[in-house]
Amino acid sequence: MSFKITLCIVWFLIFSGVQGQTISGNVLDEITKEPLVGAFVYLDGTTYSAETDVNGAFTLTVPQKLSAFLVVRYLGYDAVRLENPFSYTGKLKILLKPNSINLDEVVINKSTFFSRKEMLKVFRKEFLGKTKAGKDCIILNEDDINLYYNTTINALEATAAVPLHIVNKRLQYDILFDLMEFKVKYNKKTLDDSFMRESFYAGTTFFTDISHDKSVIDKRNKSYLGSPVHFLKALANKELEKENYQLFAKGFKISQDNYMTVTDSADFKKVELLELPEAERPKITGMALPKAAILKSSRYEILHNKKEQSFVIFRQGELFVDKDGLFWPINELSFGGHMSGLKVGDMLPADYKYSK
Image (tube, rainbow, N blue to C red):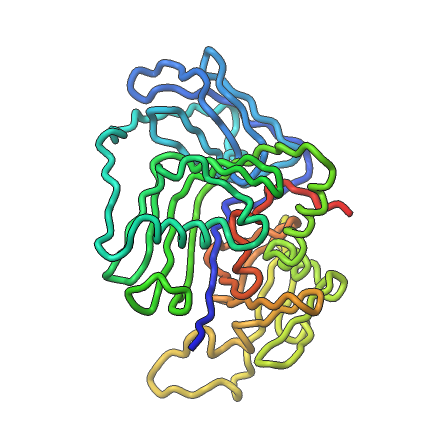
């Protein structure tokens, strides 16, 4: 028996506006109020960063306004993630709290069921991916990954006290991934892919472009085309056919207009799934109908370039998509098939621009 594997990646970044924007402020020790020199400040999922000077001051300028987490890190201190930093007026004052965890006291959980080597093999596949890009990634600090098999829910879980340092040799990016959650669930106590229910990971990322030849453009474009970001951008712009997508519901090829609406909402596109007429809804006496029973369909099969097969499941039937294909709320969609296989190894910066 085979099982569908679903994937939900948390995107923390939503774009808005078109003009260049600047964030500035100071990073201080929460207790002493002394400036922290050399603190690393970056916008999640992008290549934009800055470091604090001798006064703990920083200035970060980007081409357009972003509603993204501003992440501030300094060795020996807890990281700070500031939501919607562009919504603040004036300079930011960011206080970092000394890390209460002594790294020498961190205990690596040991599973009595699976070896670290076995769990690490699964982690690499479900975090980096099994594509060419995923296989060409190297995690330089794998020893910082804490792996644990939770027998209560039959899930492999992972944490890391420091950002994972990843070198993507194929797409030529140096990546810092601050792992916030990683979980692979199974139908029984196993690490066998055949019994996998879903895999999920979340975190903040910073990309450094380390490209050294023009051939990388084609490789990056290949990762972009057919990705969830590319699909959602085409969906929100009603350009599925133009971007070589076909959409199916319940086994039949469909027109997007017959199953969902797309409207402008501020700087985003609002995508809403259409509901069944009242007479066609299932009848359950004395019980409220689940959302999936009201919608015309909450699961759609996707075919890209007549060969790459994926599917997407909507939870509530409503989401907002920005001009770069990033969406909100972040837990609205789960992807399966080809798109679920595009993990960190095929991830591109949110400010990546496709070019032919």
